[in-house]
Length: 334
Image (cartoon, rainbow, N blue to C red; front, side, top):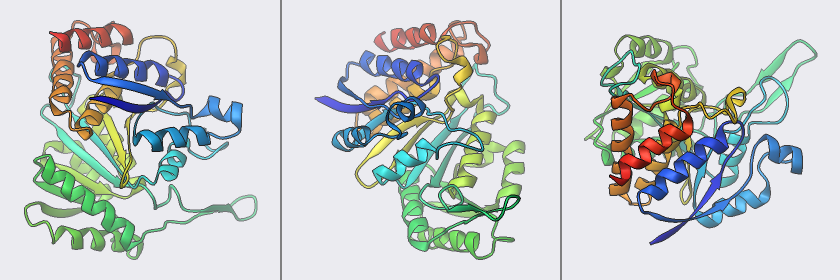
């Protein structure tokens, strides 16, 4: 079977790591017709939109996309293109994985934590406005329907992937209405999934416990902002942002993207770790029911990292992006 998959290279190191992931997918023997679309800073400079209509149409037509990181100005400029793309596609939940590989520089050998977050509400998408010159307001929106939809996905994902426990992250002790509603809605969904244990933790205490003993956790479920922070924390504990794959899902569409950002200072230097993007492609193949091909990618990545000969600087080596990618593709073909 030949798949039509949209590919959005993004900004900075995006084109390099996306190209690496495409090479790895092709090395499995899976037949793919890539449909390229642009988004991010260069798209904005050319069209005035961070996510052009043509790109949205391409992803909708393919129903699956492989997406690189996109630049997001800090404290000024256009709105997040990542959020814009997810909203345009009707995506409502994001999954990020933090797995420690043998051979990686990790504080937590054996760590394997999934972070699942609702991505249509919360402070990241709530309206903001100035109040005079020296004050500003941001709105945190939480609804029972959106929380329950994302929580239902989280529990089903946990069952499909052999997970046993979901921890709901919140700050309901202080944000009694917004986070209180989020916690209650998630717990209500959990009652319908008795095979999965459901507990909860205050976000600040959870961060502390993750640093001390991340292996105690299995799946974390949170809102847009808490989930973002927790996923970076978990990936850092597992060995670094370069190792983290992710995906965002809607009712009919899915995009697969790494945890890390666009890292423009490294763009074009052939030095960054392609693992997060490559493993995002493996998640994509699992979504397409190509489980055997996905497993070969995971195994090849694990073997190359454990061997430690042809890995990038963050993994203790001196190989470039292209060299590490080649080592992974060679291992897959073997």
